[in-house]
Image (cartoon, rainbow, N blue to C red):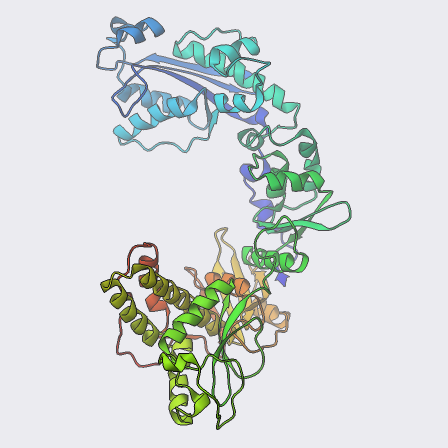
Length: 593
């Protein structure tokens, strides 16, 4: 499926950022900061009275920063006793409007570190905002949070700075003065890094995401990621019998897979999966869309037990309008080459039943499952007595009248759902007026299921009946991605190499693309999920259509125009106001793009 320029190095290799590679801790410059304040909340009016900071890299102190700050308000007595900072000490000190810029200049380019970072960084951000000063995009490390993942009750009774300073034999005793506390925090940071180094944590990314829930045995499996490229693609975890356990996708295969062995993975199932994994296989892809599509196909093929979604794309339902003398609606699991019309696919039978009920509420077609003769002579069922069926079974309706009803049903099913929307809105309003809100809610849910299904069917069918769509888009990394789509299936993906002839590249990509044959139904050549991923890419900003073979159109009066109103109503379980309005639009089609 993939094709990229040959002989040229991949931009994923040459343009990798330090963040993707993993930055060694010894190369990181940290700025450890501590504040003293007049209270616990900047939003509540508390002010900064002192800023202290230490800049370190590779265990070496590069510089220190300390300044008292005039809060322009009285320091509470208990704060003065706690910190030793009195009103007289700060009377001639600079205000925060001068102290903050000086600190930001000192900390520029560093990773900020603080003990209980939300407090210190929160104060600094607050006053930066008050000064209309843009806050630098600092990465922040919280030694208190990290300590709670590393330090046990046997080490210390708690994770206060004073307790940790004793654990790590800090050369400075914390005393509620900013610079002293910052120096003590430096010793705590180094102590934590030393402990984690024994667990295989050697980069900033590993330190930021460390969790004690990831076992040492799991961390030792990091080598499984080393052979993977820094490129977009799909990865497969396998057990010792080569069975696929999990399939995922990423823009950087090595970095993503490596994170399973070092990152704070909150899903217990993933920790279990990593524990029994023996190998990881990577499949490099030319584009992110190709990776997403390959992931779907591999999950459907292998059905890995640790993937929750997309494992059974074949378990779908359709609402079928049969082709016979006396057509009817039915729920089916497969699309046949029988010239029938299909609505769907539905991911659940329950949703399909609701959409079916909405159609039966609007159109009194027969609901019996037997095939009727052209001139049937049977007794009518109870639905006829309730005026919910025209009863062709006993000759109550002629073939022409019934065919006209079926044609209106087909129009609502495939092109214009107005009649269903209008009928059910009227019924909902009547029920609500009679305060039969529960019944009204049932009709609302039926209509919601139908509108969603009609919208999905129309969008999918517009693309899947098209023999070929070729499109290109400039991706976030500056490369031009090209995709060939046939009957809604991704048939080829590639990236135009720098300096290459774009027309020739596209021509060769089309020639090498997968041969795709059509079939009946809204999704003839791929799963609905694959075609919808392709559609999202085709509808993304900046896309350029290279060629369209056939016609790619959607109904002007289709379900899409009702969908936004439906969603707004459906979000409120109490709202029963009708949605959608009848418009006098001719049943013509408009191009998708």
